[in-house]
Length: 349
Image (cartoon, rainbow, N blue to C red; front, side):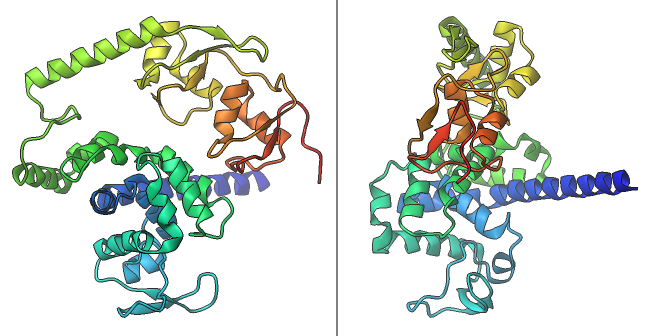
């Protein structure tokens, strides 16, 4: 009976997780264009705006978003003269802004950051450095959660929201289609895409949909060229921690290229490197065999924005072991300057 209850609970949790992921995808597909438009107007990374929207609304499911079109949890403040609603957040029945539509909420969020002195230093940062922006928001006091920056970074990297920092309002739908190819079967989305093409000048499409045969051939040539360059420059090294074999990725490439080069299945590479996707980025460390369970040095002090996964790759330690040694919950990220234990387990405080 206990086993049946446990199995049923696991099924329910899996369904909840799957539904949440679906909500996140739908949210991105619907509101990415707003985030990119705001990026063009106010120089705020679209990835940051989208990640904040996802987090604040729970993938668009929050009461504030659904009833008040408020996607960023912005409270009334003394300068707000529009509609309001009561909602319990940090305290019972707090006053929150209500907007006529989500687009107003996105623009008000941009103004909230752009016109307040607390966030002035954010606009000195590189617009494509989402990690610096995430930590800058936390430092400026945007949220009270001590892990706020790491939560934003996790949202961005899991959903590849950084792709929207490299697009513009004319090409944003192509970027959405690149991330979610199944939208080709969505008539409403494709109608929007057609409308976008009709209302703008011809643009270079980087997604292999609805292209001429020549464009497809050119894209194929570029892919072959990129793959050949990667294969030619890959150098297998032995890691100082136990001599484990690894390579450093010289350019953005798919995991399948590494898999074919070394005759190792993608599933093994994903398991050994604790990957949650098959897209590799320049300077990623990829192990060609299982990592060690302990480090070759005692401790390491983290740098700004560094994740536990990055540390595990740097020192060739299995991610689960790294979390266990430091008595941290899986998914939790370290603070800048935090001492990470690599050999022995962190002493109890």
